[in-house]
Structure formats: C-alpha cells, structure tokens
Length: 102
Figure (cartoon, rainbow, N blue to C red):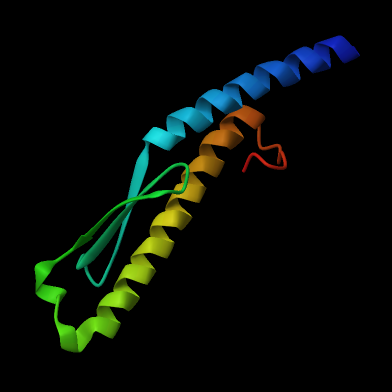
C-alpha cells in the first residue's frame, strides 16, 4: 500500500470519526443509584444533560446520602457514555487506539 493510499484512508477514517463524534453528542445514556432514586443522563460527549431525583429522597436530614447517590449516578453515567463512545469509535478504527479520539 502506497503512502497516498494510506493518507486517503486516514482522511476517510478522520471524516467517519468526526461524524461519529457529532452523532454521539446527540445520544444519551442513563445511570441510576439508590434503586432509581437518583437518575443521571449523560451525552456521548460526556456532558451531564439531566439529573432526576425522586421527591421521596429529599430530606434535609439525609442530605449526605442524597449527595452520595447523585455522585454515584453521575460517575456511572459518565462511565457509560465513555464506553458507548469507545465502542462506536472502535467500529470505525477497527480497534486501533488513536490518541485524542477516545
């Protein structure tokens, strides 16, 4: 394979990656903690989009527990968003790890 062909393939892959990143920014994943008392929605670009809290857990005396539930659900949502992005990108790159992409 010649250098020109490799460059062409790299450009095609780069375009596919850019399109996938744009698509993933619109896709979301949900994660919850406390048996669904706190649910966090994150985008494929690892941005928190929404936090839902069951009204039953809003109690000033249990504020520490609520904060822990939010933290747990947020970290799980970001983990799922990263896994979704890595999975989709590996389909384009054939499992090749490209720095700065995933």
